[in-house]
Image (cartoon, rainbow, N blue to C red; front, side, top):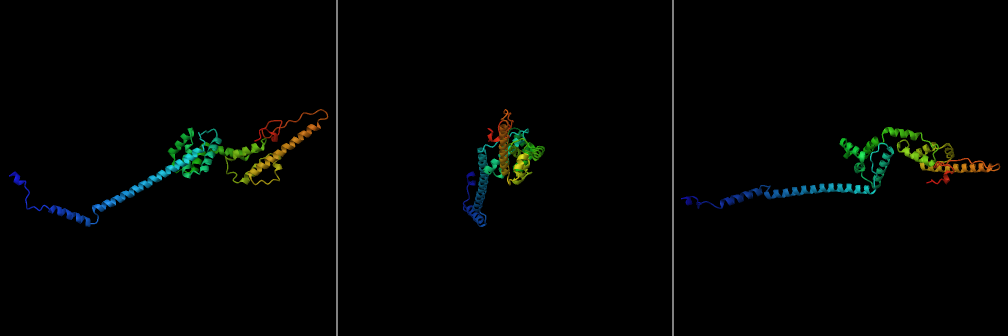
Amino acid sequence: MLHSQRSIPTNRPLQQPLKANMGKQDTTKTGGATSSTTGVLHDEEVAKLFQALIQMASRELDGTNRTLKYLKLLLSLSPTEYTGNLESSSEALDWLRRVKKCFNVIDVPGDLRVVFAAYTLTGAADYRWEFVESTRDVESMTWDDFEQIFLNRYVPETIRLDKADEFLTLTQGEMTVFQYDSKFIELLRYAPQLLTSDTERAEHFQRGLRPSIRVALCGCKCDTYQQAVAAALQAEKSENIDYMSVQESFEGASGGGGKRKRKQYICHHCGEPDHIQPQCPYNP
């Protein structure tokens, strides 16, 4: 019958498969790499990997925080923006000097200086920098490389050479010592390599002075540029005082037969008549 065919034989050992399976589990355990041991090793590997990811993320976060920290400090100094005016090389040099000064004040690390300088570029200068980024590896660019690229673009070598020649032939002429000093410093920045020491700058400054002032400085020992400027200003002041005395003597001597018209003289500071530098209303 169908019912009798589906009945389980009574002589079949029901416990035998269970015992066989248990034996296999024991054999696996004694074989070395058990399933539970494999699970422990897997957990340790995952933990190590997770720890490595945490450290990597921490380093990246530290780098981001570091960048933001210095950027915030830089912005607090209100760095000058540069638009890329090709008509004014002095404007380019002023921007470069200002940016370098800001970097030095807050001690910006070398690897951040290029990206921070590029951040202050606007207008045509910014577009130009985007072109440089497409042709150069700016991430590994040093500050010296950036400065050279910038100068070649906005203060070309031809301009630097012309300004250097102008500096080498500069003389005081009709300028006051104050004006001559200002022009001297302005031109020197185009060729700082020409005079590398302060003593050389002082000597070059004295050679360009007006002969009367240069002669007055013959007995002065000026080891620094500031000493040379101070001595020249003092000599100019004495020269103006002496000239004033001569004019007063001239007026007194001509008083007998009708006063002669006083000779007009020019202030060496502002260039206007009827006063000398010590009495100049435009003195700093």
